[in-house]
Image 1 (cartoon, rainbow, N blue to C red):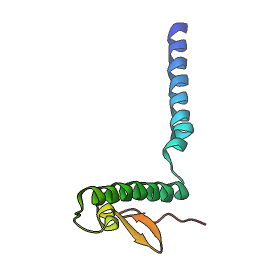
Image 2: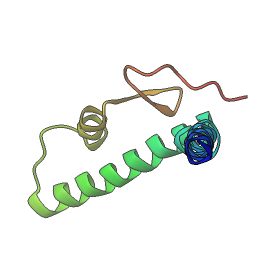
Image 3: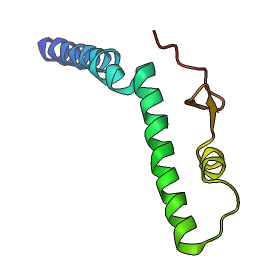
Image 4: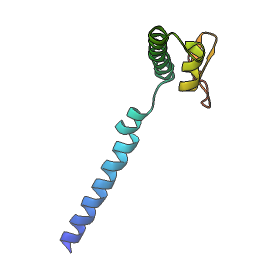
Length: 94
């Protein structure tokens, strides 16, 4: 009888720890602030542009402008000098 109670208490404690991890530290790791999102899109675009400019210099031909090619590849668009992802709401930056 007591061993069953200890077993149930252990299950309840394990469930509580998993719930706490999921709603606390793990959730915080998976959520990205709007500023970080914008910075990620900007870094991705810069990296892509470097590659496209290198390809243009190495081959001498390209199927469009580097910005156009990278924007299509990364599914981004430029608005007011800031890159945003298509299909995602614009992050609000205060």
